[in-house]
Image (cartoon, rainbow, N blue to C red; front, top):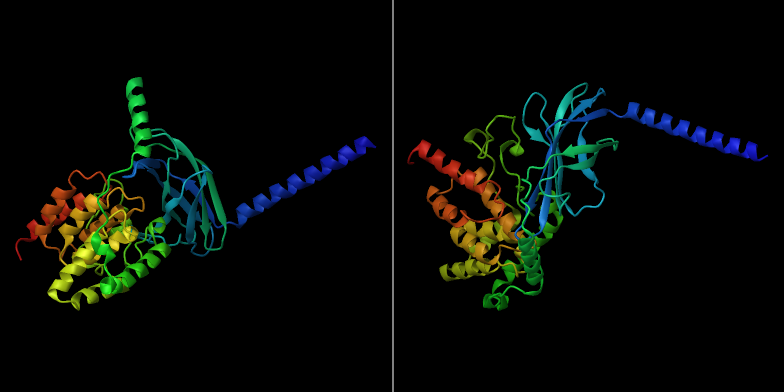
Length: 388
């Protein structure tokens, strides 16, 4: 009796395993894509101004389409390690058929193989600095099919930090503890923030930009209502190995100027004021380039408005002193917009602007989206073109 029951259980388990294996085999046959990671992926640990960390992952995946129709990859998800911080960016881009221009909108052509470029940024440390990590990713195609790749080994782009002597390690630990309990001495809040109805119209625009940023913000690489993202270089920054990447757009492929409906509103409000009123509005905007401002997370937008008003250097100077070190990526996004301006609008920027900006940012530790290299190249191109 007992033997018969055990035999029955074994047969049920065997039947279940057979069904599971058959299901997995059929699923593999049904799926359109075959994914094989290329060699030379990497990850990088970047320290932020507020002493937090962001982990960046870059890998390329050979993607073969076995079907008779184009297949798009809609999204990529980090599934290993399971416990990680907020995902700031997760994109997968493919080259255009017959070209090198990469975009998330490009499909894998039927019966073809293309190299998918995957970029992921997450808040926090995925591993020890300078050490390799193992990850898993999940990609989703346009039909909702899931493709998982586990066990991808990523060497680190960081150097292994030298081991400090015990005395120095203790000193560093004590300093960190002290920093937690000793608050930074801040200057008084700007008195202009207490202004009455004088800047209500500006507040309406800034609040609407905050709403836009909450929907299209840093986690997507977006910048609120602006018609650009933090990746504003030609070809989305991708290039073939051994080829010098393009940092500036050329005349033939000149993109539209950076703009948005909210920016147009801000510029109209500025233009409608008297000369004194314009200066007061500009000072009000400058005052909000402050880590304590309720508008710190849309500092990129405030900066762009001030740039259009001719206060570029003033805006960077104030932001470097009062905004840097914020915890909402306000200063980082501001530098991202400045880098985008140079990439896209260097044709129209006065070259005299680059020297004071270069001097201001020369020793700035904040990641600047290759801003220094872009300004250097823009100055060289202006020299090549000659005066006028």
